[in-house]
Image 1 (cartoon, helix red, strand yellow):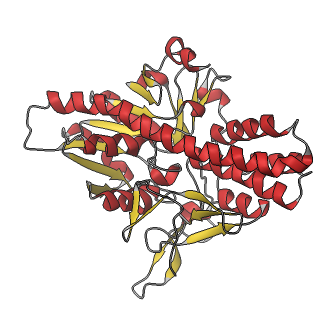
Image 2 (cartoon, rainbow, N blue to C red):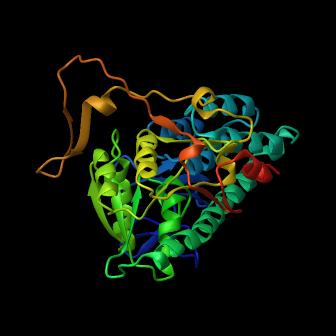
Image 3 (cartoon, rainbow, N blue to C red):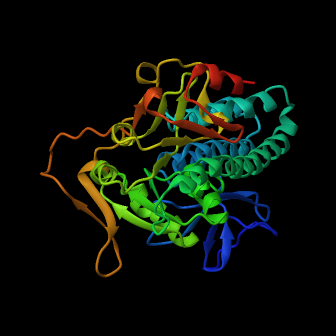
Length: 373
């Protein structure tokens, strides 16, 4: 199968067999939306075409797309596809898409923005306006993520400049996947890494496997490999040990929702990395678009809804066998009780800096309040 990319003259972060890809794009030839199926990576690179509202909902729920920025853009394209079927089902589309993933605030932010553009639009104009909005938000997300990386470079550059032993690279630890696959392009945490590599800082990335679903092992390692950035996969419980041994210069992670006070909700396990970093005086940076800040929330631990996902994500592993076939294996006794929280909250006191497209800020309400407007 030959994969076609819509990018014309632009160089996206993902380079696959000499072609550059975004994580999502609009196919003008048949009014459809194309995504990279992230459930097949790193073993298969496959494009899925979304033609209906149900297709978009399934892509989000099944995590064919994931990451707060990408979920938001996929959702607004889902609204467009719904209106293409029936221009009068705006409310239905908004409700169905809002229910797909409860934690990432970008989903609600993107749908609210789409609703504001469409609610007073005549039915016969809604499809046109919805597509304009979706394509605009796609382009904006790519530009915002690139800017996040640019803003973060100065932090990593300062750490590199202060590093006494220049015979070793700058060692960065990251958790989950906050790269181009979590956004339209560039990503958040990995955008900082990509942009830092571009200015010539020698880098090595410690990649947490990030159970369950192993997005670090399957997605972050794949992305870094495409960029030829040195990296090493580690088990989730190794981060604290590496920090104790002086093998981590800083941590950079993303966020699915951040409160106005600076509490950060991200993939389960982020909180433990932040605790280890705090105990070992390792800078802990969080990279996120302003759209990931929920300005209505004060206490992330009490107020952010934590998604609980299917037990099989913990009890089973997916991969390819020695014959190259996809297979699923069970790790635990059959019928065992399983708890599978998808996210945790890192208190603001453990965060060194928050990196946004608008600049670098302390994890404090007095600073983040400035981003509200």
